[in-house]
Image (tube, rainbow, N blue to C red; front, side):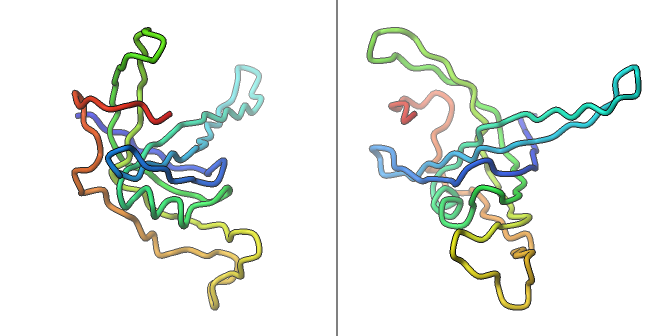
Length: 147
């Protein structure tokens, strides 16, 4: 089974761009935290950063709703791909491609009010955007690297 499940805090606003085919693509910079104790019982906190890629409607909705400081959970698959760069070198990339992103907490954008009756929490009842369209590139498909 090829699957990842991550939940954490978003490190920067999500921006949507478009591939030459017209497919929307967005990256979510996600921080996860691990807490453990060393041999002297000293608390150690470690933050890992993950770049999550999403496509299609999910990418457009991520850019519309997810901002720095939001909390999201993502489920998807790990993909490895390669391409020939313009300088003739072979490039490789491992990607975390989201198939589902759920909003756990959405931080209001600058100047926005919290939703009425929701206080400062602004939860969207774990509303997610499930990636079911086939616009996401799959392994073996040739495409220009948009990054």
